[in-house]
Length: 351
Image (cartoon, rainbow, N blue to C red):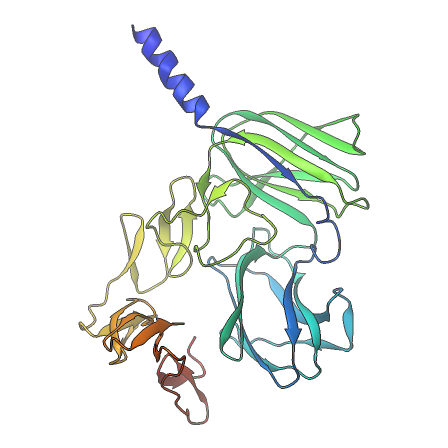
């Protein structure tokens, strides 16, 4: 009876696993590595508001370049400088179709995940997640001992096992076996133990290849509002787990989704980052201080103050503000050295 029960549990666990096969055809060009993202058609005079944030500490540096539709450098080149808060405002000089490329300058020894948000004249244009890189990268979770195959045409493959105490830091390089196949390179990795891994593939000269492994899904390490354009986080599920992904959480256990550490000013409680400052009923907590919520908000996000519903039935919550259904809202003019945050003017030194 006990043997039958154990067999049933084993079959249930095995059945819940999925064999993931990820082709990367067409991803081996300069658009993919370093990663660039389409901005579509832009008109001279339009304003781009760019924000780059990192959910965990990183020693990496990078630059942001505006490039043409084929990802070629513009003449003269356009590098968009970010403020210390990770934001920038850029006015389009010439009408055309463009891409935005993130290029690492000094890469830290970890997976430097970033969130990139772009607004065009205040409207959402881009909301993506990626990692600083110069090549093809896949971040995977193996839920039990399993085999892994990487096949492609092009340069060598490197498989890294991630540190068990920090799912972002490279720990060791794993040796694989190079075998003959229809592909120029095919690597097999046998009986890899449970854990997190990163696969790096030098940009192939021929755009074909695939990655195959068997595992359970794990919670995606980014908010559901972000899009993993290049499928860096293979096999993850974007289902909202209720845990805190991104700031104020600085490190997650992605096998469960629980937050492991928080920014200063927040308390870790049951896998979530909660404020340890008691703000008033109509205030929100933002990096150590309490700020008043706009009077037009009915409900709001406790950490950003963004409106999620409105007091006035004739208004809707859009991009964190209550606006009339025709799209108009409360426009304000901020004094020098300050900028608008929701419906308030705050110092430029604040995020």
